[in-house]
Amino acid sequence: MSKRNSQEAKRAARERLRIEREKQAKKEKVRRQLFVGGAVVGLLAVVGGVAFAVTTLGGDDGSDKDWGAAKNAKLVQPANAEGDKGTSVVLGGKDAEKTVDVYEDLRCPACAQFEQQLGERIKKGAEDDKYQLRVHLGAIIDGNFGGNGSKNAASALGAALDVSTEAFKEYHGLLYSADHHPAESEDKFADNEYLLDVAKNVDELKGNKQFQKNVNKGTFDKWALEMIDSFNDAGIEGTPTIKIDGKTIESNALPAELDKLGA
Image (cartoon, rainbow, N blue to C red; front, top):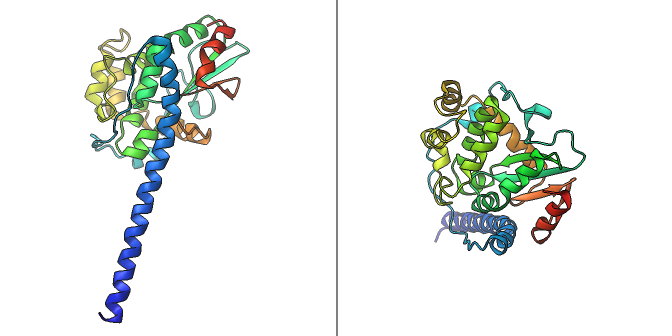
């Protein structure tokens, strides 16, 4: 073998080794994130008697939307958004002293299980002014497995928030419901038609032409990306993550903490 061919072979081997190391690092990162979310699901299975298993994630992104262009577009905030750049969604208890922050990914199966078991209880506590409830949306699964469903569903929720906080609240619950939350191997939330079909179950959104237009045009795509950036800045490594007054609550302590808050 010539010296040149030998050098080429060595370079090719190094490149194969680099790619394999990157793959392994990505798998390890995903394993850690699913472990964190799975810990919460383990608690909910005990509380609600629900068995849950995390299956393999993957699939095509299902959307040709240019999210790079959305990132550079003009920021349009939903009418009822709050906080810096409007990336805070407050679902009740605005004047309460205590705060509860919920960090979720809309494609996350652990988040769906969490919402199905404790979502209504947490929202009811905020409605009763026991605490201020703030929802934060990320896109961990989009980033790790490809697809746009987490981002696209967040944008659609922005369109619902523009209608009313109540519309956001109801739509948010439906997207996580057993009837409408897709298997983690599917990226159905990347499909606007699917999102609009789920929205037909919300009175304020059913037949709402402006809402439909905002979803299809991606009016709040930039807003969704800003919220995801805020989520990332918070250093969240797994979903769902719950914080009370800024302190992360371990899964086994969450029901008792909600009891203390009167939820």
